[in-house]
Image (cartoon, one colour):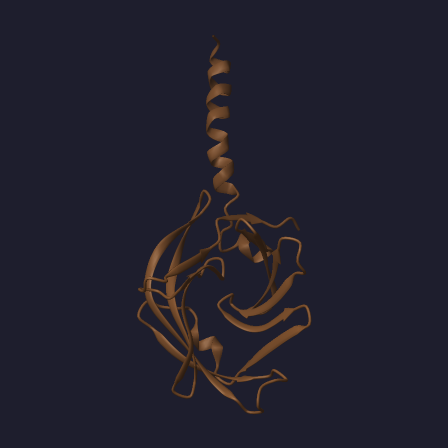
Amino acid sequence: MSKAFFIFAFATLTLPSASSAAQCPTAASAKNGFSLLQEEVQSEFRPYHGPIVKIVNRFGTSQPQTVFSYRGLIDLSLIDGDVQRANHPLSDLSGVFPLKKGSRHDLSFVSLNKDENAGTEYTYRLEVVGQETFELGDCKYKVLRVKQTTMRGAEKLDVWTALYSPDLAATVARIYDEGTAQEDTVAYERIRLLQR
């Protein structure tokens, strides 16, 4: 066999892995938009304005849900059919980022929902409790484990943990009832760049 054949064969064998690596969004390419996918969910992440990310979630054949989020971690509003919810931050969110392991932030919000009493304030506590590697198909990302607690006064309303990728500015998994027999993890499985 000729030397040219071996060169061609070697190139053919190595191309898929190189191609696969090239398709993993990076901190730079993710700014052009990407999709996170799970068996029944497709979420498109696109920059909207400054640190605001627009996330469109599609669940099978149902109507899309739109979320506007601060750096893909702190949800500011949700539009889901006739349901619309919004939270206005009273705290300066820019001081939260970049997130660092061991950091804790208590953020104040007021609800702008028509069914809420005017002036109802909430505290949104973020605690960065760990760091790990998370796989999305063939792509690997450093993620921070961010415990999130929503409170109204001293009352805890909701506690869950986000696995948050700073490079993607996206929550790639959510852990509910962590450390209990009911612990449940909802995670994306694959990622791909959006076509511009």
